[in-house]
Every structure is written in C-alpha cells, then in structure tokens.
Image (cartoon, rainbow, N blue to C red; front, side, top):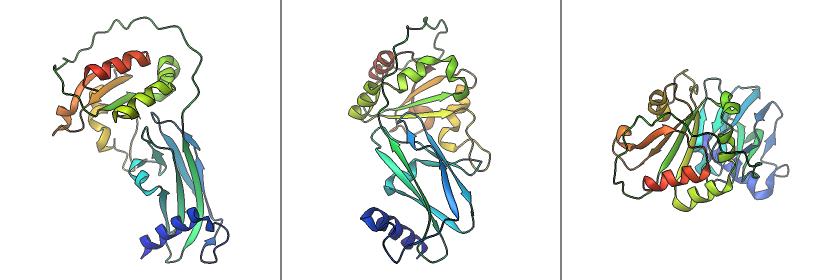
Length: 245
C-alpha cells in the first residue's frame, strides 16, 4: 500500500496537480540539495536534509531508478545513460498518507564544445594487456576509472566528455558510458560490486579505460580492452571500432 501511494503521488505531480489537488499535502520539513545538471559520461549527486524520519524516495521516469547508487554518506549518485533526458527525485513521507516533502530535478543534456586544446604528447607507457582478436561486433560498455580530483592534470578528459560527437556515436551504436571515481563506496563503506573488479584492476594506473562486452558470461570475460584513457574523441571512437563497437 505504501509503494502504491508513493507512485500515485508521482503520477499526480506530472499530471498538473502540484499545489492544487486536495489529496496531496505539502509539508516543508525536508529538502533535497545537489546537482541540477548531469552529463551522460559523469554523475550527479543529491542529498536529503532536514527531517529524515519515515521517508521514501522515487524518481520520474521510474526506469531511471536503476541508474541511482546510494553512497556511504547517505547521498544518492545518479549515473545517466547517453539517451537520458533528465529525472525528478521525489521525497515522500512513508506514514500511510500521500505527503510530499520535497522534489528535485536533474537535467541531462549536451554540453557546449570547449575551446580546442593542443594535442598532448603521446603516452610513452605501453598497454600491458594483450588485445584479443578478432572481436565480434555488438553493444559495448565503456568504463572509465579515474581520480576526479586530479582532472586538472588530465585536461583531455574534460574535452572528450564534453564532445557531443562522442555522445552521438555511443547512442547510435547502443553503447553505454560509465565514469567512476576510484574512491567510490556504498553505504557499507565498500566499493560497489558493479565496479569493484574494475577499480581493483585499474589500481593506481589512472585514468584507466575498459571496453567490455556486456553479453559475456563472466566479468573477466567481459573485458575486451584495458589501458590508459585515450586523449582525443577520434582515438576513443577508433578504439571502440577496433573492439567491435
């Protein structure tokens, strides 16, 4: 019954009933703070403040809920797909009534192209992992493990993730992009299971890029490529094509 009321509340909000339906009670005892914009290759972070008593949260559209991860701090991290347009997070009281506490919108959209930068010097470090060939074509997952606090030392990352051409290519081919900080932990202060293997394999060789086949039976068998992050969008797309993407 509680879950039914929560989703009824979400439907009312998007049917134009906000502030007008007598069945909806607005109580300013909690707020949601955090990012209002996100890039498909990055994540947005939101937190709940105020009375954290009996509350439940939902998102619209509902399918985007699986893109949220609970952090050790209690905050939520939202990792949008390349095709995501945005999401609204709703807090409601879980007291058997339809009681709205707060709502927070996150918009996902293309970012303006940055000023071009000179191409960096070639990376002298060879890729230590063997490259299996040939590789069948199909949908791929591109996973970047990085230390986000060190992005100023790797300016090419910002240039690539702000390049609309990359998002267009990923969406056209059905690929997914994920970017994770190497220090990410969940509510139990553990690295989330969905990224633990990649964080441990990357180690200190950051930023480290994986291209994987999501159809493989084992996580080790999913990895088609592991190596240093490419420094231009063109090089990254060519690498994807080399591994069936």
